[in-house]
Image (cartoon, rainbow, N blue to C red; front, side):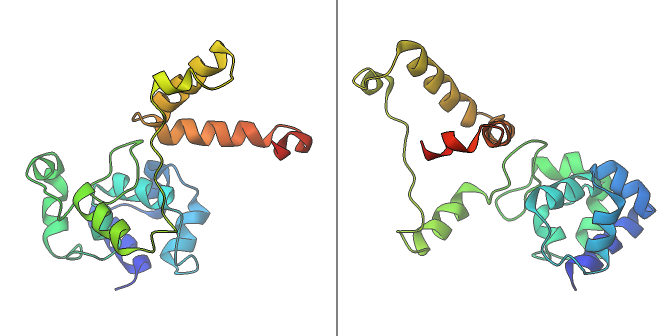
Length: 176
């Protein structure tokens, strides 16, 4: 079953029209049409997350990695809060504003199996090492606060704000 069929089936199982789902997922009616018609085969992760949250299904179910809406997901859609309590790594539902990622136990195996040159994770230098850098105290403080924000539950939103704001800078600054 395709993503388009799954989204449509989940929507039908809720008794919603396309406008209702688009409204609840905070996406445009056109975007939903593109997904449900199969014209957009690989929507953005944020769009998929909003659709999954609106439909109260896991990302794995929406992407077809578990049983479809005729199976266990449709039957437990009404009891999502209780389903979340007993949910393990096998199935997960992304939280509002949370990162779109696989559970940690599988994330490491995916990264370890990948080409190591593609994925490099750098830890932020400890605050004690940041004193050695030749930067103003205010800049050091802001860098620390930025690091804390980016690693918090607000990280995704903060990164988006920073990226959009950075694009507003004149192109002469982009050589930094």
